Amino acid sequence: MSDISQTKPLTAVVGAQWGDEGKGKLVDILSSQFDVCCRYNGGSNAGHTVVVNGKKYAFHLMPCGIIMPNTDCILGNGTVIHLPSFAKEIALLDEDKIDYKGRLFMSDRAHLVFDFHMAVDGVREEGLGSKKIGTTRKGIGPAYACKMNRNGCRVGDLLDWEFFESRFRTLAGDMIAQFKIEIDIEGQLALYKEYADRFKEMIVDGIFFVNNAIAQKKRVLFEGANAVLLDIDYGTYPFVTSSSPGSNGIVSGLGIRPALMAECEIVGIVKAYTTRVGEGPFPTELEGTEIGTYLRDKGHEYGTTTERPRRCGWLDLELVKYTNLTNGFTSINLTKLDILSGLKELKICVGYKHNDKKVDLLPASLKKLGECEPEYITMPGWDEDISKVTKYDQLPENAKKYIAKIEEETGLPIRWVGVGPAREALLEIK
Image 1: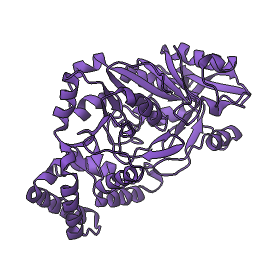
Image 2: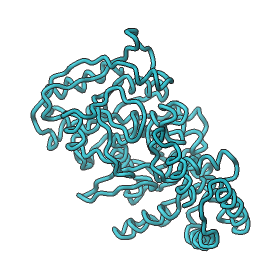
Image 3: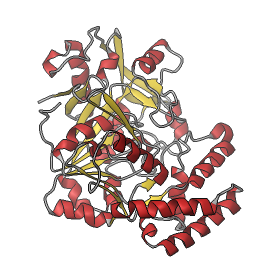
Image 4: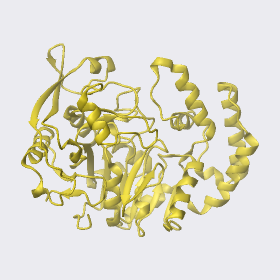
């Protein structure tokens, strides 16, 4: 929608569930208002889908703001970058004649994901057997592990080839010795020499870049990947990603001072029902039920990155209350409300009980979470197709009641409602 009202000069878009909430669409729409769009965490394990003029873009590394001709984009120091994947996404931009030159940057402090990280990801996942994490096998965990082990390679290392080559040979040798994998060291070095030459103009001091933009009073949009319940600290560990997708990741992933977050508008993206990919507890899951299948098929719930079918369930507001507690959302963008059309009754989880006792906060113990019984309220559904609705007032009364109940239970205003995949299918509640 072109007439969307402005958000604050510093705005963050954060997934409030287990990912796949539809963050990319809002980032795409908002990015026309912003001078800079920043990815601050994750890598090509994320999947952001944007639909512009009927054309679907499935980005994994690229900040969604790249579609906007006047928006600069940067991958911050908290990201991990697989340059072959980055090059593929650039090729897609070239195909559609989207000019990114002088607008697309990488922080020199961001770490690199190599093909052998992906191989290690697969080896580790296979070794876990029935206790697997459900990783995307994009090498994200192993790359972050190298970062923490202090033997990783950073994007800025490519600007000093002798230093990069030495670091790479040492790291590759470690991987071969530890995981018994094969690595074409010379072939990889030749490839990365090409990348060093090709991408050198995109490599900048990311901390200076972002802070300078803020100091110049530019409007800056922070784009989260994955979601809070996949956060390495706050998520359903160990079934999480290896970074910080929430607002906490903005400070560490871009190098801005914490005090600036007080000035930031933080939009929590909440799907009108709940989904997750991979393993882990899911209290409101509808697996094996007619409604669960209905939500998956109608909502096209298959992973952008993995193409795995997503697990589907009723909206769980206990999860949203928890992610709000750790992130401080200022508003909600409710997405995919149109998928609920046609259901006679809708259930919303508003709390958990464990051994007949009320649970005050999402348990850290996965065993306990798995044993929690959702407390549901039942709302009347609606039959109308709302995918062509252009104003909030045109929604069926029962849809409005569903929205109002979410606001009541979370204490948060719903500012936008998504009723379809196109960028025009976003209703603003003013």
